[in-house]
Picture 1 (cartoon, rainbow, N blue to C red):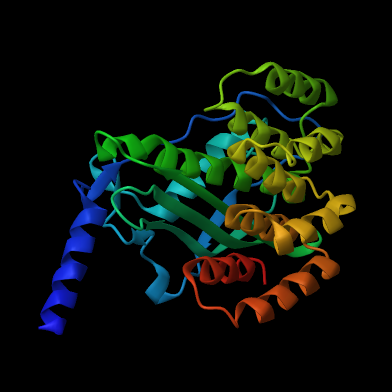
Picture 2: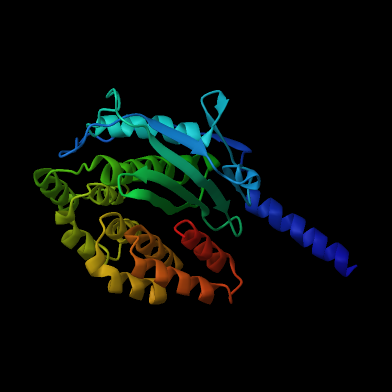
Length: 318
């Protein structure tokens, strides 16, 4: 009898979590950025290679079925990333049609979007991750990406598509492109454009999109953005704060390494701590890697969804 009750409870919970969730979603290609970079080098072509493990080639998965469609076709994640990275780099002013220049090799080690939902009253969340090795003039560079987004669907599961699927995919492309620009093409946003973007953020009243402009500061590759980004990393607006913490890593703000360590150890929310781990991974220094190794040892003693996800974020960089 106890077994029957347990099975029935599990079935009920599964139904409650799924609600009216569809088995697949139609997503969009991102709109390319509209601010060109300066100080860029000429560029050859990009060659993406799939180095994912055979058991890690399902891109979108989790508690709920969530196949992703692009038009009439199933989304192919590496092609999606490559095609839209090229568009983003070209929008930033990178000439990828230059002849007689070496091809940049990009090895995709991990690329996924995991979804999770505790029950029918909690947010549908996605955790989007990337780990890639890129050949640069200085040798192989490990590039990672992580973002968490969530939304409680009220009337329809269509409500989750833009915030939890389209926006993470767009940020994935833009951040990866910014890092390629930083380490391969040496491009960055001008000081003038950074100042304009800071003024836009300061005057913004649109809470839904403000955090996207904060990410653009991170994607600027311009160190002049660091002081204001650090200021925003203390704000009470969760999405703005997450974007700012992430951007400190993208911008290489090594002067804030100790601040990021404090957040990684004692951040108020798991998302704060997770984003600080991601930012430390982006710093990429020997000191940063040593800290992540130490955190891995600590996390291995705890068994929970969030600790498992934290360990996975760290492994993107090691």
